Length: 178
Image 1 (cartoon, rainbow, N blue to C red):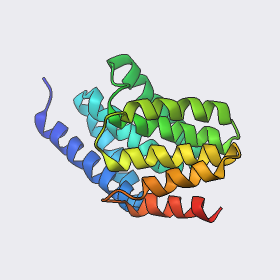
Image 2: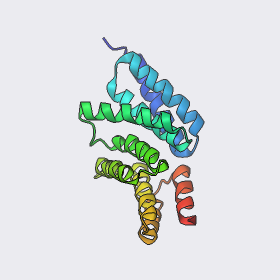
Image 3: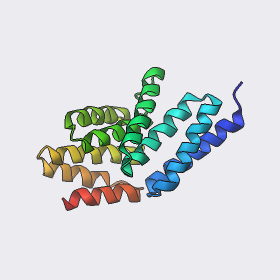
Image 4: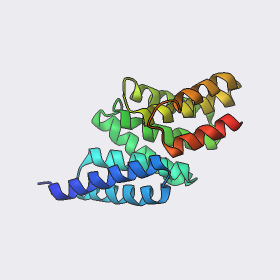
């Protein structure tokens, strides 16, 4: 039997970590998401593990810990594939984290493939943060492919929605500066 208190604590820590990630508090986000993942393992809740590891992968990618980002994203993606969650909007996060790792390695085709999967995962979602994050990755790939005007349009569209996170505004600002 699952321990409901452990699952509630894991969900609380995961949501706190997600909020901290979007607000730009990466260190705190990483700590809370790792705690959530540990509690999800303890309780045997695969969905919470998928959620915590996916967002922890994003924190790792954001802070340049590419090996950890790749490993966490792969774990989260494997859970999503095994459990049928690839169309859940939160699945976009590990896809984007893994895409970022490929982008850093200059593997643009693989980054594009994973970004396409992230785009499919957020299709129809009303979550402005997830949609904006996907749009920013798409913009980065378009810019690298030599289409800066379309990339700029995507950036401006991604940051036009409220609420807009500090993390996404900063990433958009970097793309606009290029």
